[in-house]
Length: 438
Image 1 (cartoon, rainbow, N blue to C red):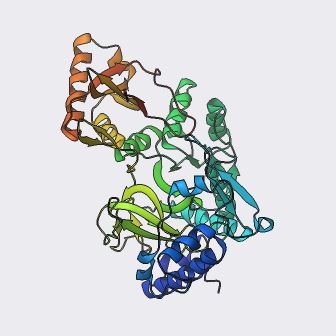
Image 2 (cartoon, rainbow, N blue to C red):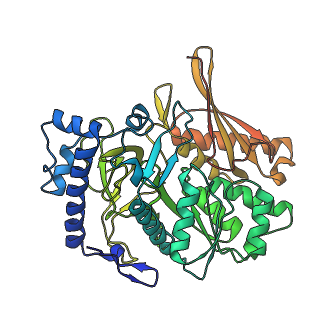
Image 3 (tube, rainbow, N blue to C red):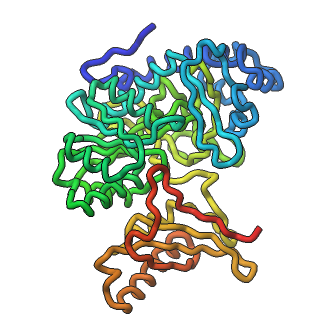
């Protein structure tokens, strides 16, 4: 049954009554579990070990009985071991960058691509975009899912698409200006780079028609959002997704900016205790686990994302009935431990951006000295302060050190860096450099 009914760019699926949504989820969950059991040997063997068959799903609560899937499952079955349809039905392959060992490979049927375009269309509509907009896609195209995911979603919306891809930053700014671009899709760190490059050429994004930024693919803080909105005169929206599930378009903020609506008619969310695997109730923070309800080339059942968040079930003022997740500022595997203290990069970014005169460009360097692990934070400061008196710089350094210490409980080494010395990213920003002695 096709339940997608639209009124302009508004999807009826975003406003389903809760009872109907749960019924739809149950039907789709039972179907995808059977499909995976019958076609994916790894999933079937794990189900058999638990004494579970393809008809074990009688209610949504039964999902908790099923085994988890993790990223190493994709690497261990590289390249095609998790595919659930014949190769003749696969119309697209994507892959991760493969920074640690083999890349992970994901596959799509024609129907899977239609679902992806649908959720991306719904995502962009949630940001207030329509067919009247000109959307520049500055995520990388190719094996990375970001570029093509945003591209086909924007086309499904009926918008004019500028497929800029990543890199060639000066040209990107020129296109934003000359084409009258009204929305940009990219990583938040790259958009900051666009702002800077524009200023070098006398282009102020605040004076251009661009009004919306759709940012994802890397964690970013509320402080980063504020900085972007002030310096570009736009509204910044957080989009969430991951290649293993579908790509961008799993969840998106609405105009309320109070969490990300997860398209739970397509992706069923759970929050678990990352240590015990126990399912936690809505409202409690833990690790996000996702199940694809309608992805047939490569279904993911209870995939552990390692992203830390919570489910917000209270009604949203926008009227959407889809539950929300808190913005994801950290991952359980991003955490590093220094002298027994758990530290997330997002905590350091929050502290930095709370101090006037700092920039969102920084590096976190982990190093060992006298047998003890330490943290050094190299942070750019703005031109005005950098050219100030030495005493002012020393005062700023002390203020930053105290801000970080008050948030993470550790004293760190802070190094002030001249403007433009921190390397800019044209994709996902690399913030942490681990140089500890093992």
